[in-house]
Length: 210
Length: 250
Image (cartoon, rainbow over all chains, first blue to last red):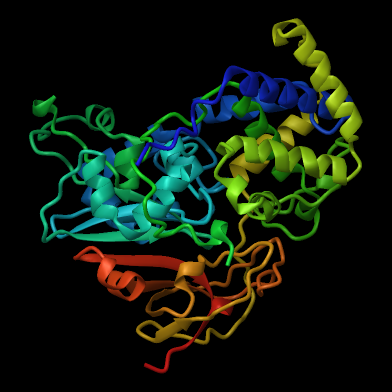
């Protein structure tokens, strides 16, 4: 069995796509559908305001503030609307978000077998592994095998809960706070949290293990 | 059966490429941005949206209905064997270009001609985008990103099921576009959450979506879905529209 080589196409194919999309964007600008700056503004929004750095701050706050954590698990949108994050936490693809918590008993993984539903305001845009048909096909049936492949070995008695996204809720995971982080600030904690940990395919590593 | 609707559980696929980047080549960012602009300028936002966007006053020549359903239907309409040959954003590029041609904004000939021009030169840096500013379009796009397009609707509907009910997922005929993973058809699960307000799906489908309806979080045991291929200690939850569910007899 060979690895799917979908990410390495020959140069001609990439050059063609690059020319095609430039042609399309130019025509849309010429015809007054979008402006010459629209696409750049969209990309800038996700680079500077809505990215996984928001989710990391939310996770770090939940680890240090039990009241906030309880609210986050109960009503994510209400909890994240008022903690100093950019305006728009209930914006596009974040209108209805829910958070599930990893514990010693349950490990959660978020998937989207039909497409690539992802909570944009808190986690930004989905990485390629999440959109990959191989991941979507395999995680649904053999999540534990996929986790092992990604370097996460859980005890056999831990239940794995899969959260598939076929309707209008966007899910993310509150990972377990790693050992050896007592006394760390929210900012230091946030720096440990990755998008993969907030989708449940990675753990947050203990800083002492680094 | 349509493979795009039935990815879950396909065997013998090999190792997953754990690629953490969002875009693997720069052109992919551009088609993503175009899609977001179409979502933000879609004419359905004028009448059927929360919040209310005054799209008709935005100075764009775009006057079409574009939603996730349109984009997804494109990918679900590809020949299933071809679906796996295209990278994620290649499917977007094909679907979105096709939509602009079909709706009459551009012709295939002018898109081909412009593409050929850029290919001939071989260097996109020599061909900057038209310098045309329209702040009111950009403002609407960012407003849409910040305020969203909530599908939740404040209408009274009486949910058919309550928490704890056993349901069976209906068997439906393959459609152009669906929000039901095919591998769930015929399976029995338990209502875990009955969401308090109904949700609509902006893009009407022939399998019953398009009007506000209850949505449930349904819990399935992995053994119900996969039989003896199931991994131990595994449960699967999915948010499913009510139209896909019926009362289970067992």
